[in-house]
Image (cartoon, rainbow, N blue to C red; front, side, top):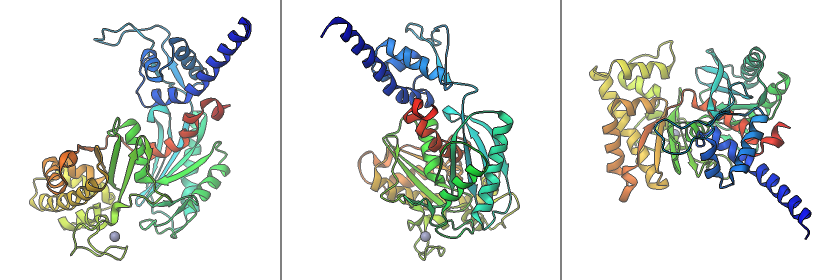
Length: 406
Ligand SMILES: [Zn+2]
């Protein structure tokens, strides 16, 4: 081989290596794991020249910002490096969430940053096309107002979503027909609203877990278990090595129907005493003995826990729910051996009300070794299901930034 051909070959190799590193590099900046170009270089395992070219390319695509002048991190002994951050006015994903008490639309940028949001509290119509049409219109309005480029859309629903059909199997608290083709309906609404990019749909707790793993309390966990209430009911999710474990047809981790109180309330699944009906906001209000008010079940239950915990009726009810939640978590710990648990919705509020009690129940009922000592943390993101819905829309860009944005 002559010298010229070798040089051309090396240049091509560098270009190829740079292109395949674009996605991993973007994911590192997106998840906050590469705050500087020096860290990016080390994480990617490439030369400084390649990392510099990759960062410049992502900046040219409008996805990240590279500080022009290298600066030392506060208190750092290392050499100064260029700081990396997600672009302040870069593209966004349109995210939508429907729950028992209303809906919300949002625009979510890289880094899980919510750029704009519009809540809608109304009685959710029994026709999914009606509800999804309204929420997508809200999102499209936010896009017009901000003038941001859209990479795609994601929807979070309080139901198991069967794969590959994209149907909502059990939207029990929405009065939607079981098996409604929600992904298709959402994609239609997105197209009709003139929003560009692909459209995705997922279960709200799965998406919350994905968001917490990338941007919140689950960062750095290898086997992350998430358990959360919505406004009604309970869901679970598992993120293994950064990927959602969804099972063979999207239905894994339907933890809501674990029995935690054999003599308990009848459940809509036909059993009784399920986590779903024993530890959700309605169960808590019933246990306290108060009627549901106009502010929504979850808000009302959280307010009681935060502001009236000294009231014996509230404390006794909370302890009953904490014990049942602890039983359910212990069963899941024995099966999955997670290295971290994050709790959302009312479960987060129960943990914050009495963390020692919940941890003790889980430890007492778990198996040997470290499984009983698994850290149990509160979810930290506001609107984590919305951020997770946006993650679905961001995924093609994270996989291949040049291909997705070309
Ligand atoms: Zn059940």
